Image (cartoon, rainbow, N blue to C red; front, side, top):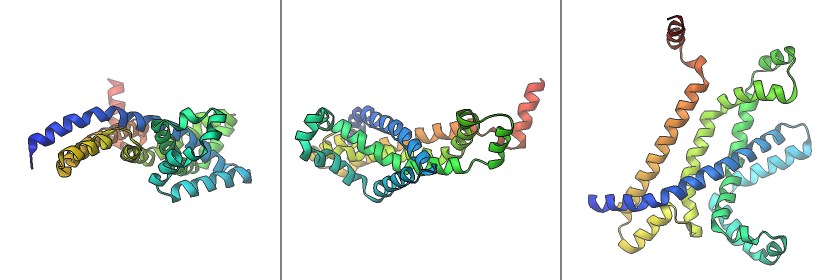
Length: 241
C-alpha cells in the first residue's frame, strides 16, 4: 500500500468535489420542491392527482437510478428532431443537466414519501387548536402543519441528502468528471484501483460526515422540547441570571 500515492490521488480527486457538491445540492433542491408537490398530490382528495403521483413514485422507486440516467441521456437522444423543434435539445444534450434531471426526479420519488409521512404525523389536536384560534388555509399550513412536519421528516430526509451525495457517483457514466469520474481516469492511467478507490471513499466519507453533523445540529435546533429537563432547566436558569 503506497501511502504517498494515496495522498497524491486524494489531492487530485479534490478537483472533482465542487462538481459533486453542485450536483448534490442543485438536484436535491429541485427534488425537494417536486417531493412536496407529489406529497400534496398524494394527500389531496382528487383521485386523478393521487393516482398520478402514486404511479410516478411507483415507477421511479421501482427502477434503478442507473437505468433512469441512461434513459434520459441516451434514450431521449433518439427524439432529437422533436426536441430540437421544441427548443429542448440544448438541455438534453448536456450531460450535466441530464444528470441533474435524473437525480432530482429520483430523489423526488423517495422524498415525497418522507414528506407525506411528516405531514401525516402532525397531531390532529394541534390543527384543531389552530383552527380554534382562527387559523385556516395557508396560514395554518405555514404556521402549524409545515413546522411540525419538517421536524418529523428531517432525520429521514437528511438520509436522502446523504444518499444523493453517493448517487452523484453514477454521473461519471455520462462523462461528468466529478470525484468518481476523475477516479476512473486515474485508474485507467495508473492501474491501481485499490489506492484510488480508498482515496475516493475517504472524500465521500468526509463529505457525508460533514452533512450528517450539519443535519444533526439542525435537528437539535428544531427540537428543543426533546433535549430533556436538564437542558430546559439550564435555559431557564440562564434566563433568570
